[in-house]
Image 1 (cartoon, rainbow, N blue to C red):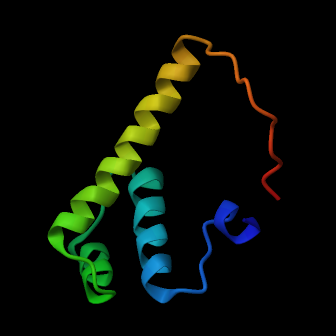
Image 2 (spheres, rainbow, N blue to C red):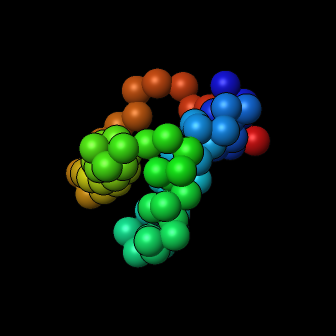
Length: 81
């Protein structure tokens, strides 16, 4: 769980997906052809790349919704170390 919270995996394919997802977030979707090439080289198809992007977008949407409507968090807070 600790590795997952830090966006780290021992599996190289999973790590490529995590790195791509992080770039999508930190660069506001402005990824390069090289970024896409790295994920494809790790073994992901175009459909899987679209799925990664969709998951990132859904998480951003739900986060913005929760912030905008001040949704109460009803589960224990977890420290991201």
